[in-house]
Amino acid sequence: MDVDHSQNVGHSQNVDHSQYVIVGAGLAGAATAWQLAAAGHEVTIVERGAPADEAGSSHGSARIFRYAYPTAFYTRLVARSRTLWSQLESASAQTLISPTGAVDFGLERDPVALARVLEEAGIEHELLEREEATARWPQFHFETEVLWHPEAGVIDAERSVEAMVVQAQKHGARLLAGWDLTAVERRGHGYTLRSADGRRLDAERVVVAAGGWLPRLLDLLPLPSAFRAGLPRFEVRQEQAYHFRYRENHRWPTFIHKNRRMLTYGLPGGRDADFQGLKVAEFNGGKPLRSAAEQDGVVDAKNRERVIDYVRRHHPGLDPRPYAETTCLFTNTPNEDFVLDRCEGLTILSPCSGHGAKFAPLMGTLAAGVASAADATAARTLIPEPFLTGSTRQTGSAPGI
Image 1 (cartoon, rainbow, N blue to C red):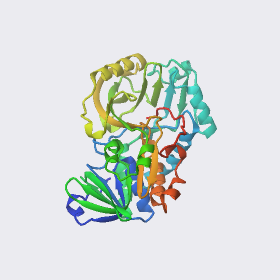
Image 2: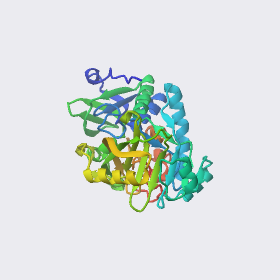
Image 3: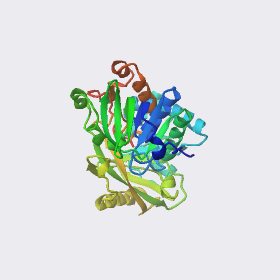
Image 4: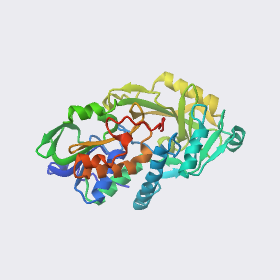
């Protein structure tokens, strides 16, 4: 599917105004643009590079889609999001979530508690004894009971971004790639955005969905001090992921495993590594950055050895020598909840903490409603309380991926 870049640098000189400007063409920004444009609004997406490029958080073909959370809040949101994913797959005539099922295990993961949540939410699942799970998936070494839910899968993040941008463009949205934002100024009842190469774009309302670039962009936004103080502390990490070849032709589910030593996750790697193996990583095992601007793409040798040792001990179905490796960005909040809020005509959107990809169409729908509400007071009534700035409610989400 081809994203239309015809309104890129050359044509953008004539674009000086838009009702809505979306900053960031990753999963969250593309979803918001799609929903706003589909509602009949004039939309321009500005992206410092290209949609789903490697400088952001939405590149590649492998993200986990799952339902298992320690509390029902996110599980129910996943169910709502899945309906929107199906609509996007239908509209784009392609499969964006490949079914694999998922297993959760480990003393600290608490499969029994996760199973209770899925039971309450009406999500199909099984809670298996260790021996039964080992017989079903001999490529794993389980030390606890195992939760299985078959409706989980793998999201093709890059193609999902492309599909949502195309849908937005079909409804008249414009994409300005290579648009590096350097200033946002209050102008009358709207805003003026300026790029590094001197271009200017006036907007009535702005949605900032910039992923790991958000901490740096916050300093550019004309936000009142009280609103800014209510935002959580964002921590960006340069994560590392490794691809391990399959020893045998097993059918691999995604997994999340948490014991006292570490929290790890894995999923079939897809196009990211030629479909030859499983992508495995330690959750939040990468170095902290002030923003995505500091990423260097260098894999930490100690992290590599830690993950290799983990694979050697827990995954007999994998060759413990990684044949490929990569880095990516995680943007975290202290309680791992997302951020969605609006101040005047500015909407801040950050479905982060390593588990936002699966919610992209839903977060785009929520953000579109928030951005297009009559005023900020009305907008805040549309936002789940844990996402609001200054919220003290915690969902007990726990790490997600």
